[in-house]
Length: 222
Ligand code: DX5
Ligand code: ZN
Image (cartoon, rainbow, N blue to C red):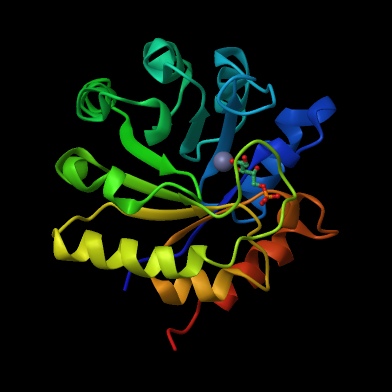
């Protein structure tokens, strides 16, 4: 059985003390740090660039899982990997040359991920499974933290797990949006192994206890 990874999203951090928040999440037991890059075009919000990735990189040894919610994501590959990104995840909806783009991410030495919006079918990634290290199933419409989990995502995760297994793919299956104590277990049972959590961990009084609680929810397959 695959390991459970919890990836706190710094979108919900207190930016006035970003470095401390990242270090705190590492001490709290996070497996990865999730960095949400938004361009105000693919999604209606603006966030970080390479400088922030570099800042986060200095404060943690954990893998940096960079989620690119931007059009023309290839414009940022080199800079973001140089800044310390461990993995780059691009959206299929704005990546017409997925195979080339994923191959390029791998060439740079990072893990190559594809994210799909709630309305995007799994078939969007079917032809690139051979160059895919991570599939990110969005369980909210991207753009903001603290949104409500979309229920239909569970069935999609089940189908995604089947698709990866059938293809013999060892890609990580990640879910992002509205993950908390009430939603994580069903995603785990459906076959996800990596869970982004923004609001749930950053708004918790005790983030370490919250991460442990999220992980504990995944302890058993039904
Ligand atoms: C949404 C982002 C998420 C977000 C998750 O567009 O991709 O990573 O930060 O936040 P929560 O866990 O609060 O839904
Ligand atoms: Zn994200």
